[in-house]
Image (tube, rainbow, N blue to C red; front, side, top):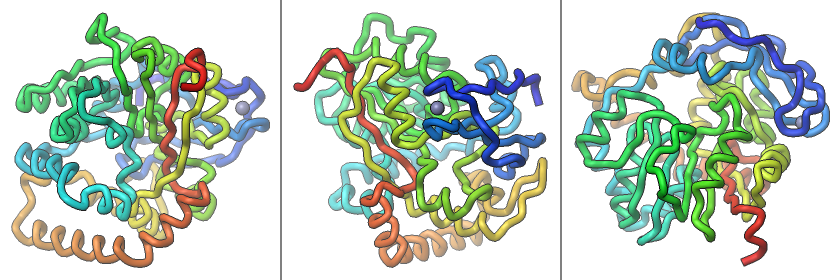
Length: 339
Ligand SMILES: [Zn+2]
């Protein structure tokens, strides 16, 4: 892969020295070659992937080793309508998919979604009668945005997209852990908030039950794409440094993550190779044979059955205990005081 800068030995949250937590870990999701490690701060428990990447390393890494699924426009639109379907909230709660900040939006608000990916979140916001803008680094998303008439800036929030515009809600779903410099991202985002605005982020929780149980096999290490690994306390501390206070924070475990984790726990990753847990996740939906479509339908039905049963119960109990696999954190600018 592309050149990587040397490991920085200090914590991005509290500047204390880091020590080795996981000495050797591979990318078995997309097969990016190389051996990585996870370092842990001795003071606040914040973790980082070593070697650390810089902004300039990302285009080569993501374009070579992060395939985007082929997008089926009709399926995407159908999926978006589920956001406002009857019992939609209950279904999200059971499946653990309400770990996404844009579901907090209310009609009439202006929302910026940073890292809008396939644009599903923006389409869901449109169904929810919310005006939204998106920022996405992947140039392939330009065609999706054009197709649906969505306002998406291809690039970074550091480009100052949509100048002069500020937002009631800024959402980052599973984004901040990918970013080389989370502190500067949080600082830039704060300047784009309306006076009563909120930032809602979701990201993996290193203090989760699944992280503890799975160790090196935890699917959310996701090296080298996940650069920083947060716990609730270390993230709150970083947010305070960026001029925020935490309004609320909770943990949520998507049932799909648990299914993938159970599968990943049974595999031994090989450096530079994609494990079978992930090879089935990156195929193109539009080109599947009728048999594989039926198989997927049956698998989804089964997954739903499991979700409605023991997994949903276990995950929701873990979530209440703060041990869920994903954190959902709501921030406001610290200068606002209590309102
Ligand atoms: Zn620290």
